[in-house]
Image 1 (cartoon, one colour):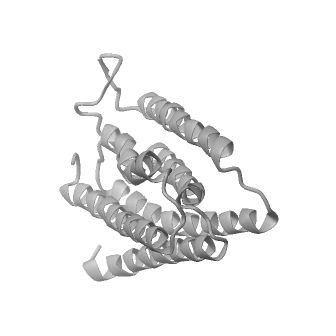
Image 2 (cartoon, rainbow, N blue to C red; image 1 turned 60 degrees about the vertical axis):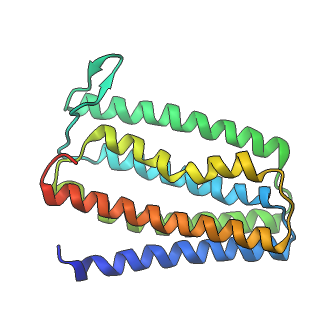
Amino acid sequence: MTQSSMTPPIRSSARTLILANVVTLFAALLFRWEVAWLFWPYWIQSVIIGAYARKRMLDLARFSTEGFTSNGQPVPENEQGKRSTANFFVLHYGGFHLGYLVFLLAEHRVSGLVNMLILFACGISFVLSQRSTYAMQHAADLRGQPNLGRLMFMPYVRILPMHLGIIFGSGLGGGVFVLVLFTALKTLSDIALDLFDRKDAEKTASRGGNA
């Protein structure tokens, strides 16, 4: 695959990420949300990233488990190893997000049809962006032999900004400057990590094997 054929998908997903975050910021300013309310669309985005990560693992045709163990035993390079890894990921990653959901429902419950429609629109935008990234990743996976353990851990890097946001941002108010700064940093992180995901998949495919 040439560099020129890679450019449109990268630009497409970056544009969608920027649009989704701008729409979220606009809604936050319009409805005078506090910074902590932004965790709802970011939680939705993180769940979508996890769903596509699981799909990516299950759709692997060839993969390596070099250096990847479970309960002290090497993970087998077969269908059983792939499915058990995907199931563990859902349990662990999903457990974290269930905890976040409980926190959000307790501290920042969503009310009103307009707010719910905004969150739904944000979710659709994030799905479109992640679907574009997944299509490139899957095509690269088919040409290479990615490491299953690496694929399982990569989504946690994508959600690190949300971890930091919940720790440091939940006590902040809803001033315009704080909202803009928080959203700008989140958008830059999204774009950088989306690009990293793509480049990493291409690097693995170009090597024809483990990364």
